[in-house]
Length: 416
Image (cartoon, rainbow, N blue to C red; front, side, top):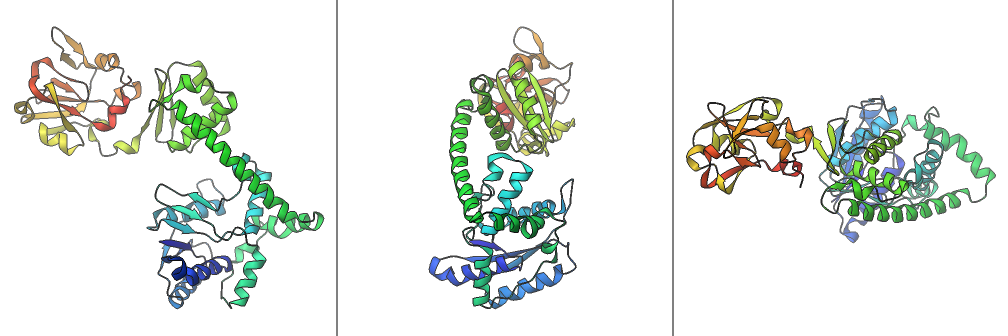
């Protein structure tokens, strides 16, 4: 299924018309999606226009109304963020957008004056991944705005006009109506030269991405980010590898200065911890570990609460599984009342010939420091520790061919 982002403007109407005409020939299941931003007094009229157009062309249609929250962004960027969230939630595998050659040139020029490096200067690719399930497709990038206008006129296509597109207070509109005409008048074949540069930059970016992919795989060969491997690369490549690490782990609160500080600490320290929004990063024994709070939103025991009940029931209800273990908890113990909670400073466990402090045992087993405070233990109804999840069972409660409580999400936080 291909969903066309339909604003009602000339560009998106041309794209929808083209794909609707070709859907049988190309075997496309074409749908349309209109995002109602609520920023214009005409927004309701645009929705009506898009609805009627899709009815006339027999194109399945849906709309989504969003609340544009600036959150420190400009109004255009905030609207784009809201719009792309709707695209991400759409059930189709491809979102088709009507960006054309003039948009591409504007994007390149804006990147040149704003900064952003090769990725920004490479402007918009024809295909790019939006998320794991879908891609953005821009089939009109090789066509100029004038060519789209000619197509619309030849096919007598209706469209709406967004009044904000003429407002040169917005930088892109100023670039379109005031700056670029001067460049085009002064430099022959300006558009052709810029597009050639964009194609070259996109090729260079693809090569760079391949190099970074290979470097990142080398650093993460063990399944984790290994700092000593990262340190063997040049400064420039180390920087690119860290950007990839941030991207792979959904860390968006990064900047060149934060990245440089992060890199400096990785070169100098043996242990460290950072906080990026809800994401914690920990350097421990040559590896980087990630903890996202949202992963454990339903885990009451992480929030400092005790979970009480029949052990077998509360373990299964809270995301644990019971792994067969030679010296695990016997069925008789699992049928009894018990508690899931985090370890306290006074918790002790019988390890055979002596009792050891549970927190000390977490340290000795190389549990990553930032999860020790929320590592789950199992106690009996009297509060005595009978098992440390993922690690071991108290000598007092072991049974032959018993079970070790395991919390799979925490398996990655034991260094080995």
